[in-house]
Length: 318
Image (tube, rainbow, N blue to C red; front, side, top):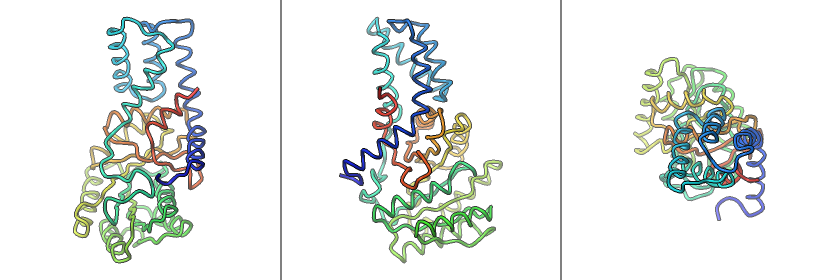
């Protein structure tokens, strides 16, 4: 059954629908204009659709892939009506969003593949990384998990202080050594403490500096190496947090972080405040990394586990 009852699931869907409202309004208004007065999908419609997807931050490469699929369909069937276009787009986008989830828990209360389950969080400052960690801790705690945080973003004093405040609000323990401490040492102590206390989930914050990719790569490699002295397969999730409202900037950040470390999960924040939600499709496709969590508001419960089918259903719902 997972975490949600039927009533709670409905509430989650309502939050999703509300959060995607701006993206949906923008995307479908553009699609409607591109097919206005047409009965079949011809080259003119495809050209306008291509422009629509690109300007909705789906990305050039992913857009071209979708258009190529539509062209193949037209070549095969000889005819596609504009009324069929919605269903075909829906199916193609759903396919682009589906990825093998490995052993990641499917719900916040799903059986964990290992204990402690270690999440290493990366991302630049300002994308909502700290609040995403707090919301993750809250959701897992509400699901009955024992959660521990590690403040390994020691480059900024504010980062440590903010995470300590959130840990206190959520009511979960935190390991910190203050600004300037060795991030790998913080990560090691966090994991050691989590093991001794029987924690289920460990969430470790890291610095998100992209001005020196080599330095970032070395730091994250060192953190991984010292954690593996205690838990050989840690971290289980390397979670990249991105701000969906920044559109193409989010795609560039995804490119740089996936080059610097082995990102295997994405969190897209601030979806409720943007018409650029199409960026999820492009990022998921281009980097072959699954979107794991989406942020749809300020409340602690507004962080959801990403469900591709629910996302597409909400996006294309009349």
